[in-house]
Length: 259
Ligand SMILES: [Zn+2]
Image 1 (cartoon, helix red, strand yellow):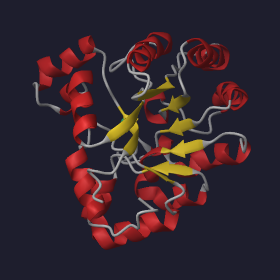
Image 2 (image 1 turned 45 degrees about the vertical axis):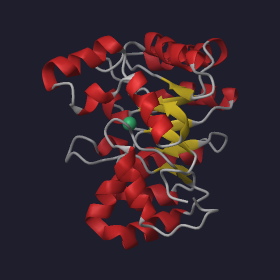
Image 3 (image 1 turned 30 degrees about the horizontal axis):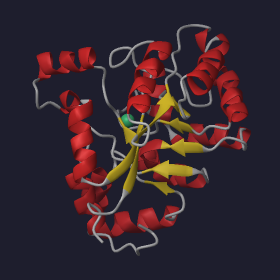
C-alpha cells in the first residue's frame, strides 16, 4: 500500500486564525505558504491523502496566533467542531514571570476545560532554551495531567536557532522521566542528539531536506536507526505538502508493519 492510501495521523499541522491568515494573503499572496493554513482547504487535503486525524500545533508566537488562552480557545473550537478529525496541543507564552506563574494554570485550563491534548513548546519563538528552569512548573503540570509535550527542535539558522537544539532538550527528557516528550523535526541536522534522547521524534518539515542532503537510502537508514516505534508521522503543513512526503516515503521500502 502506498503512503497516500495509508490511513495516517499527522502529528504536526498548523491552521491559522482567519484574520492572521489574511495578513499572509495580503503581504505574500494567496498561494504563499502560510496562506494555505486554512481549515476547509486542509480538510480537503486530509480526505484526499487519507489523513484520519491531525494534531494541531500552536507556535508560541503572537504574530501567527494570539495569547496562550485565546490560541487555546481557537484550537479547542476546531477540535469540538470536528471531534474525530482534530486533536490539539496547548500554546504557551513567555512574558516575564508568566511562564512560572500562569503557564501551569493556563495548561490545566486548556486540558481540563477546553479539552486539549498536549503542550507545544517552541524555544526559538519564546527566546528560551529547552532546559530553561522557568519551564519546570509547566512541565510538572504536564506530568501531573499526563499529557505529551512536543518541543520544536530544528537548529538551522546560524547563531539564532541554537536554543532549540535537541541536546538541550535531552536534559529535560532526563529530568522528567514521567513526561512523554516529542522532539519535533527529528532535531534537524542534530538528529544524533535527538536519537540519544530516547523518546519520540516527528519527521515533520525536515524529511525532504534529509533526502536532498543524504539521498533516499541514507535517510531511510537514519529513520531505521530511530526505529518505527519511535518515529511519529508529521508534515508541518503548510510548510510541507502531502504529495512530497508520500512520494519520498514511497521510495523507502518500509514493511507494512513499520508503515
Ligand atoms: Zn511546526
